[in-house]
Amino acid sequence: TGRGGEGGRGRPVAGGDGDGWGRVGKGDLGGSVQYKRPVTGMIGSRLGLTMVISIFARLLTWSIALPIGIYSAVKHYSIGDYLFTLIGFFGLAVPNFLLALIIMYFAFKFVGADIGGLFSSQYQDAPWRWARIGNLLTHIPVPAVVLGLAGPAPFLPGLDHVEPEFARPHD
Image (cartoon, rainbow, N blue to C red; front, side, top):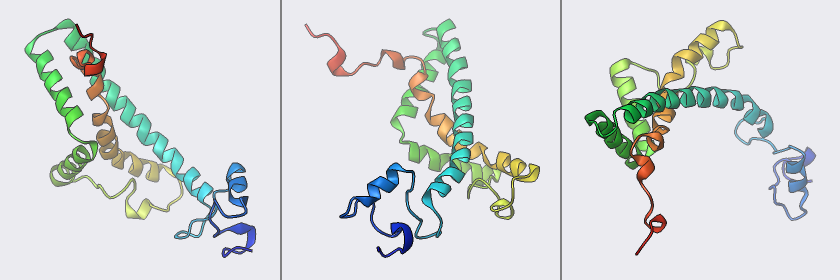
């Protein structure tokens, strides 16, 4: 047997006998060395929170992009239209990780937001009750804003006319 004992745990997935890929095909991703738990269960436990953050971020993205798009359609070539276009170019130019660091810094420094995770320490391993859900909702805004503000830039006005050089007709 492999180093991990029963079930071949601890052996590389692409081992010499090819047994690992068969386990992956059955949904067995092996065990976590650090947490001593099955990896599949760990992914499943985090998938729900990932979906919640993604939904909040997408709602924020569309709540920013849609009104700006309507404004720019109605007030085309106005100062506001040009300002939103400039902000859009800035949003595309700044790397997402840098934007995330800036938002997290300002959220911590000026708002006092907890940027250390999705739960306070007392709720980290607590059962799902209303208090834990409320704690999650107080921690969701920072990651949702970080993800949501990176999303609207491609939808902003003026950026739909930006074409790559190879797409333009040449005489």
